[in-house]
Length: 44
Image (cartoon, rainbow, N blue to C red; front, top):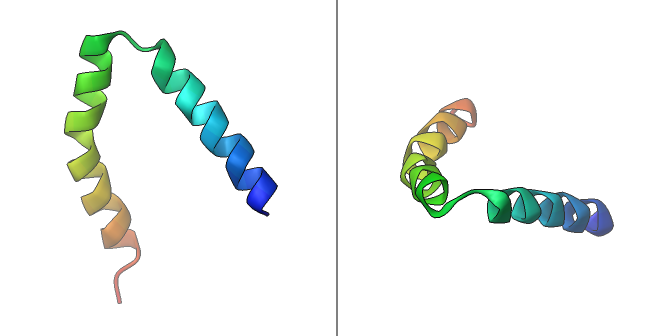
């Protein structure tokens, strides 16, 4: 399981690295909204 997570993390990191700086900033700005969506799914 740890190996699977490592591969997924490496895959995501490589995709993010391909984004231009503006795209990376937009992704960072969206993280708060994504957290809200994910946390709403984990609700009671």
